[in-house]
Figure 1 (cartoon, rainbow, N blue to C red):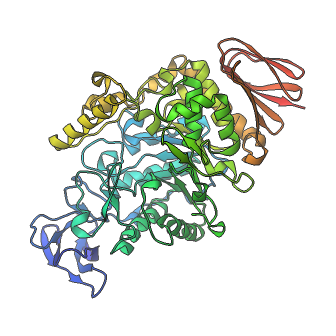
Figure 2 (cartoon, rainbow, N blue to C red):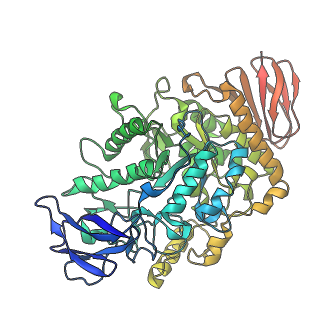
Length: 585
C-alpha cells in the first residue's frame, strides 16, 4: 500500500536532481541554501527508488540508503527501522569497563556466512563468557564477500549477510542472551568500486589521500554536511539498530583541521544519545598514534572517546611468544619480556620513545593515575594482525598449544579490556586471509598484484601469497566448528572458559588501575610474574620447568593452563610453557 512519503538528498553538485520511484520519475525541488533536494510522492513501504543527476539517465542509489537488494549499483529500497518489534526491552546495556570483547566477521563466522546463521552460534559465546560481540564492517560493498573495509554505502547492510532486517534480528538476539554489540565502522575512506557519492557532494578532501584511497572532506568547503553524514551514520547504528558501541577504523587517517575534531563532535552527540536512550554507548578508536588524548575526557582536553585499541600489547606479546622481530616487531623483540612488562604498566610501549620501524620518536605517555587500563583493548590476535600476514596464518600455526594458553592468560588477566578474535578461543587452525570479490576484472587483478608485490618486498615468495580474488581464499578463512570436538582445540577452549570465569569471580583480575601494576621477569629464564592485587599471575615461556621466587607466600592454585605448579612458601615451580594464577597471603 502506498502512502505520501518525503524523499530528500543532499546533492550540491548537480544542477538538477529527479527522483525515480518504482519506475516513475518525479521532479525534486532544491532548498534555497545548503544543496538539499526534496520531493513528496506516493510510495510503498518497500518501494525501489534512486536519483537521476543532471542528464544522466541511470538512477543512482541514495547516499543514505538503508537497503540495496540488487547491490551497490542498483536502486535503493525503502526500509523503516521502526517497523521491527524489538524483544530487548529488558536490555539496559552494559559499560565497556570490566567487559570482554569478541571480534568476528559475519561472512566467515559460520558456513552460511549470514547474520541469521550467526544467531545460532551465540550460545557458544555466552558459554565462553564474553560480554560484547564486535562485528567487522557490514556496510554495503561491491561484490559478494569482503573484509568489509571497501564499503561505499555506509547506511546499508550488505545483502549477502541478510540486509538490515537480519541485522536487527541479530542485535535483538544478542541482547536477549546478555551480549552487547559493537559495530566496526569505516569513516576514513570509501571503497574503490561502486562509489557514487562524489556525484552528489564533495565527499573527498582536495588533494588528500591515505593508505586506502582519497581522504574524506572533514574541513574543506561543504564539509559541514559531510561531517553530518558521518555523525548521523554513527547515531543510526546506535539508535535505530540498538547497537551498544562503535569501533572507529583507523582514526589516524581522519584528517581534520578544525578546532573541534570530528571525533570529539561525534563523542558529544553519542553521549547525548546515551542519556536519551538510557543505556551506555561506547566509542572505540583504532589509532596507531599512541596518543592517550583519544580517550582523555573532553573536560581535560581530550577527544572523550571511550577506549582505543592497543597494538603495542599485541606486538609485545606476539614477539615474545613467536620470537619474530621483523618490521614493527623489531623494538618489541629487542625489549624481550621487558616490553610486555612496560605495556602492562604503562599501556603504551612507544610512549615518546624511538621507533625503529618509523625511524622517529613515536607516541605520548599515558597518565596512569587518571586513565584506567580498561580504556585500552588488549589482544593476542585480531583481524588485521592475522590477515595482513602474507598467508593469513594465525599464531596457532607458529607456537605450541602451551604457549597459546600462556598468551591467553596474559590477555585475560591484564588490566586492559580483553579482546578475542573468532576461533582464537579454541586455537583455530583455519587461516584468516585477505579476500575480495571485485566484479571488475581490472580491479581484481590490480588488487591481487598489489598484494603479491607488497609481500615480495619483504622477501615472501609470490607463490605462497593467496590470490584475494580466488573464492577459495574466502572459503579457507571460514571457521571449522568441527575442530571443537578435537584436541588440542577442546582443551584450549576449556582454558579460555576457565580464565573468563576466573576473571568474573575475582575483582582483582578486573582491576584497571595501571598506577598499581607491578611486574617482575627474567629474560634469560623466560618467566614473568604479574601482580594483580592479592593474586599473582605466573608465566613460564621456557621449554623446561622453572622455579620462580614470589614476593609473598602462595596459598592456592586458582587456575593453571596445564599441570598445576608446585607451591613451596614464596617459591613456585611452574611446568614448561605454562601459566597459573595463584592466591597469596
